[in-house]
Length: 99
Image 1 (cartoon, rainbow, N blue to C red):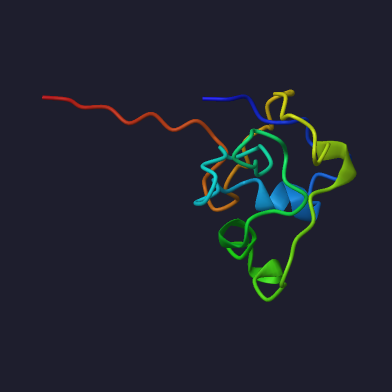
Image 2: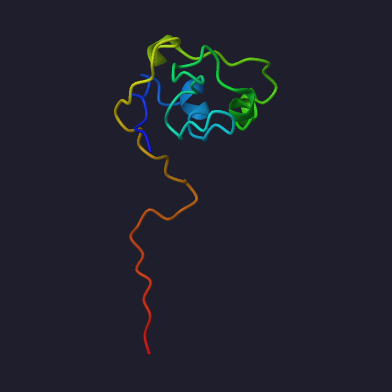
């Protein structure tokens, strides 16, 4: 598995929202941009990926931001921190089994 690119400055940018999902076409892992067959970063995200984001679902094309280096060979960056589901309790919960 590959490491994801560095996150952009804005934590809720459209690119970050798109990259939370794996790409069904190029099999890019969550946290990394879409790639072409040669391994270069694509100039636009694949449609099957950005349509999973509700606010981007009706877009016809979603360009890859310049900080992801479109057209250049993909290089792993720092891992993107996983999003924490706000519906989950924030305190530690211990679940045990007793006989």
